[in-house]
Length: 191
Image 1 (spheres, one colour):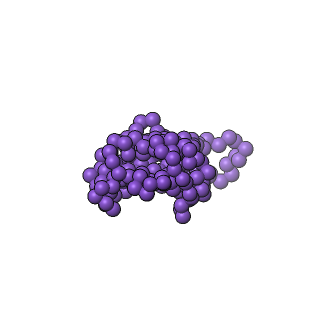
Image 2: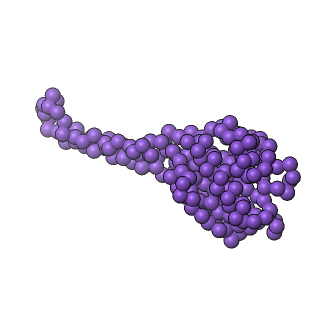
Image 3: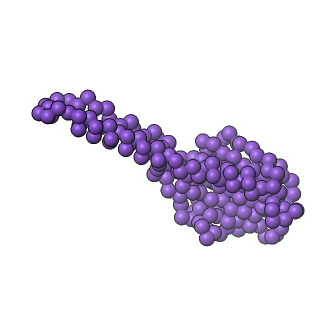
């Protein structure tokens, strides 16, 4: 979406400057300063979004120790097929998941939020104010198991979206705190 705004602003500026040039009287003095206004400069946020690129391997941004500290247990990490950083604990029933970073231009944040709301059963939604320019985390039942909880979050920062996805047993408040810690970790690492 932001890319479209930048293109629209630049295209509009070029169109207007073309109209002014086309409307000049024949024989007009080309040496006189032009009264045309330059197209407005893109804001830093729009420029960041247009230039932001996500890392190919998110595991290069964080360590197993950092993820383990956020979860409160040691983990192993590996790069997933899409470049996300997947992590798991020794006990396969313990909390596991992934953190990711994707380019955020074009309405990706809003789409991710809708995905969170639609994929978690009866989600509890929180919007942590201290993560990125805006963030949302949902926690609730998992469609995969009656005894497993799911948490997912997204934060927007500098034209990138940081994401977290968790599956685990237990208390929703604990899973929410883990998701918030991981989302803050990956958002800071990506910015």
